[in-house]
Image (cartoon, rainbow, N blue to C red; front, side, top):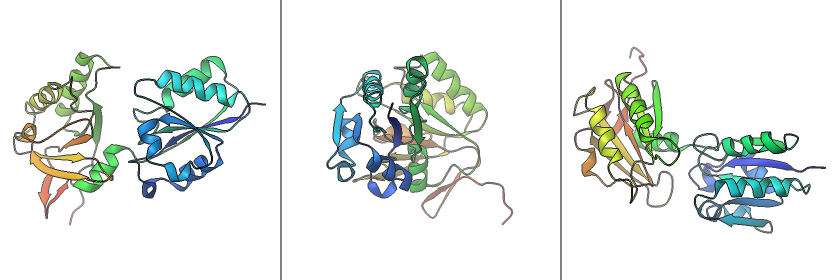
Length: 244
């Protein structure tokens, strides 16, 4: 008899921000599999369990390990930071199970994705329609990403930018800012959130015209307001449309 696979979203990483279902899924699992950095954030929940960790860019290998473990009859948790269905591990795992072992039971356990944790620290910038866009072109061609940025900016969506800048990828965030500036005022509020809900979390409020002067890296989420977004009492607010 096959075991079960949980794909667990651990949110920002702190135990305080895991759902009760995520905690139960980890506790109910015999084996924990995931990227080492993310597993290290939940060590208090993995004591006494078999832990299989690996480095970056080994997602397919990790998923195959999880499937192989489940085929032995064990319950296994695949750890994904944030929400597993938002740039996480849910998609590739479900694809691989559907292709090779569709009778394995899989449960996706949601987590708090960075757009939400970052927004809560910045204020209430996502109160109206918003778009989440990753600037990483490892999986998506850059021309496709550029087109999505343009359409989201033209549509006046608040934009939550993931993977804005890495050591190798330094120009994409500048190109993103230049595209949005075609449609929005230079003084449009921008929040730059580093290490959201983790130790040494930092929130910087700036503007679209000045955002590139702020430190931005892969631990950062950038939230760009729409034409209605404003700052009040140190908080970024996008009106929902209520009469107050």
